[in-house]
Amino acid sequence: MQKGLLCLLLLFVSLLGSLALEDLERKAFVFPEASNTARVVLKANLTRLLTDITLCMRFYTDLSRAHSLFSYASKRSSNELLLYVENSGQYGFYLGGNSVKFNIPETLRTNLGGKHVCVSYEFSTGLVELWVNRQPLVRKSLPKGLSIQPEASIVLGQEQDSFGGGFDIDQSFRGEISDVYMWDRVLSPDEVALAEYNDKLPDYLIDWRALKYTIAGHAVVKPALLPSRSDWYNAVA
Image 1: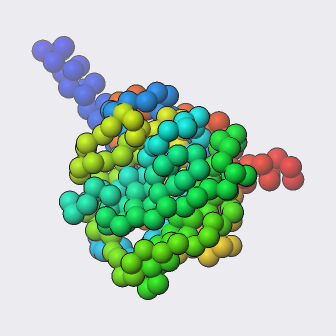
Image 2 (image 1 turned 90 degrees about the vertical axis):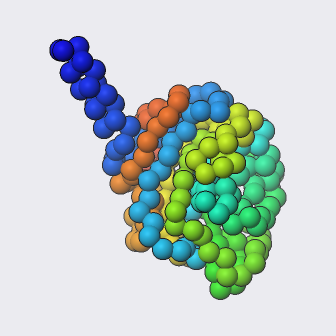
Image 3 (image 1 turned 90 degrees about the horizontal axis):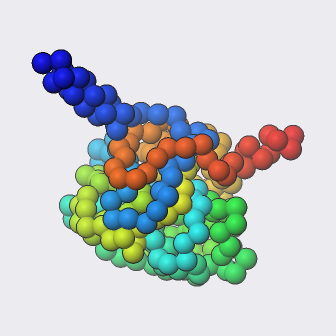
């Protein structure tokens, strides 16, 4: 009887630990090895179609092969919104089955010091912007008037080929991911700079400082190896 109660208690604690609302400032999700199981599932309170969108995040990896950074699947499309590294010289942005590729300049290809990336889509014009370490790349475009379904499975560490599944070890992420934020608007250039400094901005859909998530497989939360630019600035000041 006591053993059964203990097992139930351990299960309850495990469930509480796997679904948390946390301030993860100065922390990171660490994926120490390639796998088709390790992932972090983000829980966002999405209640309506999304039109304008901006996604920002920081990552650190030694991978040279293709890998997923942010995978948002819906029942309509497994690539409802996907930020994907095709190779060290090219990033792909996918939206509702449409895609656009960005060629990365040589000066931004090194993984030394990690990367901060922001990508946005504007509903009225179809313009897509990608920023790497505050450097804007040449604007590209997708069809105007695309929207993002609110019923979402949002995964870090894996690329979804189906809603919440279909993972491939050869598309998995290895390294650490931090400072993930999403907004239902297009950030201005000044706001992109503030996002890299990890300053607070309004209207979050996903907020790294108040994040609800579950972890599956071999992924852990640890202090971030790479400080944000705000940490560097404060250290200098």
